[in-house]
Each structure stands twice: as structure tokens, then as C-alpha cells.
Length: 517
Image (spheres, rainbow, N blue to C red):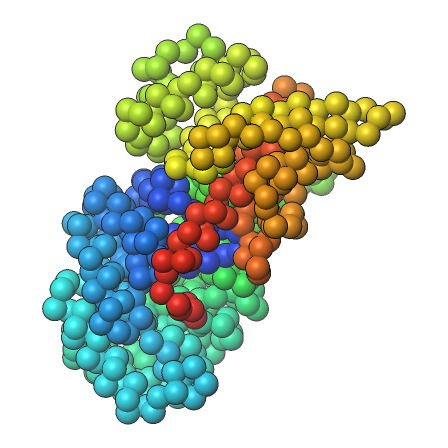
């Protein structure tokens, strides 16, 4: 390793594509656009905005991101067929820096059981589809799905073929999280030594976390010479998730002496990116999660507290401020005007249009009448919970409850412009409200998860509620916040029902497919 030269590693963020495949993490176009704005602010090099052929909603989201987000490469995923590739091009062509990311499995397991193709047929397919994609845009990424379980000789042959066909990036996915760090290091090194033309393209890796080794494998690949890693905020993704962006970036930042590599990431935007994703999806990180967890910089043991008070470096290898975890002082209240509110939104990374600002400001004023202290987390919640084109809108909630009465709820919901109401009992006030809403919307979905926490831990704090529902094997998470946790629960449930409605509508329009990467 040349210690005199710091290698720049590209960060390919796939939160909006692979991350969204995490159960319950589906996002609408508005939410994806909000997160894409923050990813650009964070400084990622590539945003994989979605899988355009999957549904009309995914196509429109990728298109909207390509149209708005500047200075960042925008990628659309496509299987190795003409229909997928043209659909991806049709969405990303609006970007300043469009990328078509096409993939096909190369392992004998997938060839035999999924693709039912010979090695020769697959080679021809991969090469011809890269050439086809190249006819539309300059930047082409090719992924050899299940690469780590592919015969090395055949893998090198395929990689050489797609490079000759015009691929500018070749991605080596550990699709099922099978590799170990030492093994993956040798695997990448072997490819770099054997493949002709490998120095003329960017070599990338995409590591899954099934054995908890996604980050470790990504870092091993960097040591072996790759120029790009694919990752997600909070490590979100299918099954056990993907390699976590924040962990990779901070490992490179803190241990430059080992990795001799750096990224373009603005590390002070890491925590906000993590929080925004949590607000949008309702999927929280565990308290002890590295970098972004609630307890990542907490010190409870007396000996640790004593050491940190005397000298922070005794138990802290990085500062909370380095990842954007400064304490947030109160800056807005009920007397704050729209101009100050707009500036605050911009400082938090929200670039909203006039109508979106007006809608958020109305909600802000309503909240400030109920809550004296408005924190950044409250504003995140106000903006992130906005969902346009909703079929269901909660209009009224009233609950009678106590230790000597059976909880009884009265609920009104607007359904396609028609106000409907119902009453119901339950085991508690939240159960009673959800039962009433369930009757109004005639839902067959089951509630399989419920979480409530406070936004800033005071008695007047907003209750932040996440509810996960399941229907026909699909999990959807809804989220909302309110100073009344029963109201927050009702809103979160309605939010989940709306997301399920959108998901089912898109499903009817989508092409039958499975994403294996």
C-alpha cells in the first residue's frame, strides 16, 4: 500500500432501491425525493433511485429524482433484458449524470435453478445487454449477482466480456452474505490480478449482512483495491440488510492509518440522514447501533464517565459532532414566522416547494400551540409524515378509558372524500381506536408490530408511534407523531393503511419479478 496517497472511495447509496426492499420500508415518491435530497447533501457519489420496471410508482420516483437532484450520479436498476434497460433509461435520462445498472446472476446455483441457462448463453446475454445499455448512456454498471459463489474462471471471463462491451463499473455482490473478510479480500485481489482491462473501470462491491459481515467484507474489499462500495443508511435492506454506509465511512475516517482511503461524505450529515430514514420508514435502529444508535456515545459506567470527563479520547475514538450529533437548542416557537421556519427547513436539508412549505408551516403552528418547545426532531416529524394522494384521512378521534371502564373509541375517517365514522371497544385506548379505524377502512391486515417513543424525553413531548401491518405476506410500516399518543397511534395506523393501498395499486401495474441482488 502506498502510504503517501489517500485513495478516494466512491459511495454508491442504494437505500432507495435495495434498502426499500426491507419489509415495511416502502416509500412513496415524495418520501423518496426527500431522502434523495438528503443523500445529495450527505455527499454520496451515486444514488440508486430505484428499479423503474418494478412499478409505475418506482418509475416516477426515479424520474423525479433524476430531474431534481444535481451533481450526483443517478442510477436505475435493470435486469439484463431490453425491456428493463429501456425502462431504466427512460427514468434516469433526465439526470445530469445518468447510470444504467444492469445485473444477471453468474453462479451455477442461479444458472441451474433460476435462469435455466448455460454459461455460454449467460455470457452472451450479459455482453449483449451491456452493449444495448451503452447505446443510451455512457455510465454502465454491471453486477454479477451471486458473484461470491461463482466459479472464478467463469466470473473473470464474464467481467472481461462486459468491460469490452462498455461497462464502466463492475460490481461484485456478495448477494447472500456468504463471504468472510479474508476470503473476500483474496477473491477481489484475484479478480484484479486476472481480469484484462480491470484497471480501466471502477471495481465495486455490494455486501449483504446475513452473517453480520457486510461492513467487514466491504472494508476488506477496499484494502484489496476496489474503488466503490455499495451500501445503505442504517444498513437497511433485505433479510439482515446491507453494509451500513455510516459504519464504512467512519471506519475509513477514523482509521486512515489502516485503510489509507477516504470518501466525499460530509460526515456531519450522517446522523440527520439516519434520523430522516427512520422518520420516513418508521424503522428505528437499535440503541447500541454503531455511529447512529442512541447509546453510541453514551457512557454509563462510572470508570468510563470519569475518564471521559478528564479526557474524551480515553473512551471516544470520534466525537458526536463529527457525525452531526450536536445538541439541538430550541430555535423556533409559536411566535416564529414563515421566513424563519423556511430557513430552518433548509438548514435541516429540506428543499420544499411553496405548497409543501405552507402545509408544513400550518402543521408547525398547530404543534406550537400544543407544545412550547419545538426541536429539530419535531420538524423532521412534521415534514416526513406528509403523504400526498392519500385515500384515507383521519379527521376525528375521541376515547373514553380508565381503570374501571372498558375503553371506547369514536373515530371519523375521510374515505375518498366521504366522511365515515365508527365506534369500537378494545383492550386499551389504542386497541379501541385501531379497531374502529379497521372497521371503517374494511382492512384485513393484521397489526404485527407497535412501537412508541418520545421525541425529546419530556412529559410534553410528541409521542412517536410506528405500527407495522401484514397482509398476504407483505409488511408495511406506518408512522406518525402527536402530543397525544392515542391520536399518534391512529394516525400511524391510517398511514400504514394508505401505504398498503399504494403498494397494492402499484403491484397491479408492476411486472412480475423478483430482485435477488
